[in-house]
Image (cartoon, rainbow, N blue to C red; front, side, top):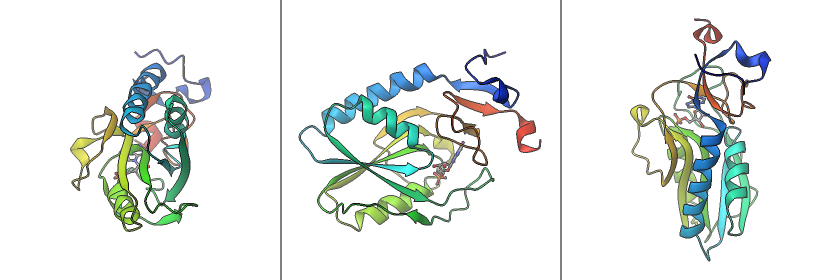
Length: 189
Ligand code: IMP
């Protein structure tokens, strides 16, 4: 049995196990930030967070960085209450800023099929930025449907549905500090 003491009591019954504890997330984000610091030193870096899942990755990564950065956000349609990709991507909120000539780092929570980021990177490249790269906290390589280069990866996870640290199931569990799996009963199993 996992020690679920970091999970608020109201959610504890829904959590099956802790896949990545908060401390490991923070250690890895600090390592990724050191890589980004080194790679983008002296450049004009714009961090683009993909709402809503990337909010905590963005917040913690940005605070580990020591180079000056600007932040912007995009929102795209997601899976809703289903746990698999429809392949349909719709921009719900676009960038506030022009990106022509700038270095853009897309900040994501998880790359699953890769369809969302494949669409987003193509869309952003059409605006003629200096560069577009991807940083994702998690990746599920076994689920990939498109060839998508992810420059910075936090952790590889198996083909299981995970929530917490920004990731949701039907808009719940985003606020959990750890990456966790849910009991099958939560999905009606
Ligand atoms: P993709 O287009 O299939 O790569 O899906 C990317 C998006 O699907 C992520 O930004 C998440 O919003 C969502 N997603 C994929 N896998 C999971 C998961 O295990 N838990 C929660 N959301 C997920």
